[in-house]
Length: 256
Image: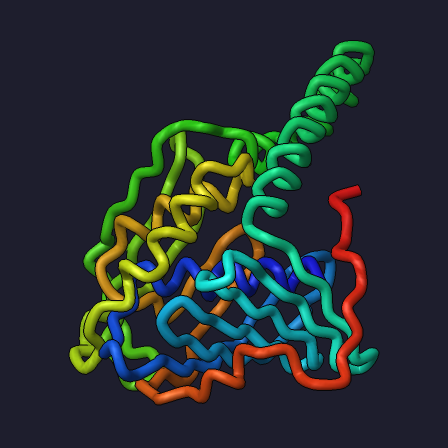
């Protein structure tokens, strides 16, 4: 579920740079590779209409974001269950998680003081850069490298985002999707809510996407690589964003 939540966040932030006609939606397919002690690959499909988004993985799980309802839903088709969380509840949960991370960081720093110089050096080498990137609150800097390449038939330009000098992510974005008009304003509301939450690395990602020109076709961040293999304008039925009949509501997960 953590991977699906990350994919949904990425799908939503992609819409900051996407443009679509008011009567149309957007459909895109992606491949995500996660390097976490062994590569994992996942295919996904994303459906977007004004104020509505559905991100479905090849494993069957799906996340639905409804800005018109100020809520998000997670579906488990294999169990025919779903949970619901309002944006206000999500905001409170993320702030609580941020406070717990601060406490954990203080405990780790305290523990490192009692380590031998060799142990401390090894710990800093293993986690130092990643912890700096996750906990940094500095401004996000986004620059283009001037490099371009074709992705799914579209010429895409490379952007590199950093925060406090630490690498944050690399994005290849295209401006060749001229048929898309603006859906951006529909999702600025959600991104403003996300930026008000203490979501660490995700906050930097959202800020970075706001500074990137075009539709992100490929992203690489902290061992997670996502590439869009297909994207097209499409009118999507409203029922796509509803909870299927026969599903039972369960409690949402905690941050523990």
